Image 1: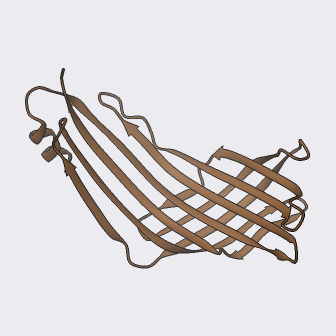
Image 2: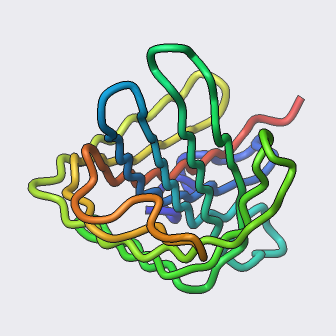
Length: 182
């Protein structure tokens, strides 16, 4: 595919940039009565390949945990964090994340690690391809799918989320651009 974009770019084009990203996300919510908790996990593997150098892919996990009283509006915990991770595998129909992420709680001012172990499985995936010739050649290929996500987000005081997520999904994205000079 890259060769066809380079050939289509022809003379007068500045160069080629490739952006690739794969993402998996899961969201848990629950509680009893007014006390509610929300946990969100986003895992992404991405790279920007801008010749002549090609950097390695970067894998990052973002985690947030919010615990609140839905009746009074009081927030007991608002923890967020991210970490560069090695334990991430993402494909078009499945993904898995095994990582430890330090969460900073805006309410208590403390930082605590959580252990994240999540697996995603998607049903059918429909790819989409777009090509734009307006300012050079830009080709975008993407696919997304709802995915069943199961796993846990556990900290030293116990689980923040466990079992099947209320929602989850997978997204792959690849953009190849050959821009015009001048």
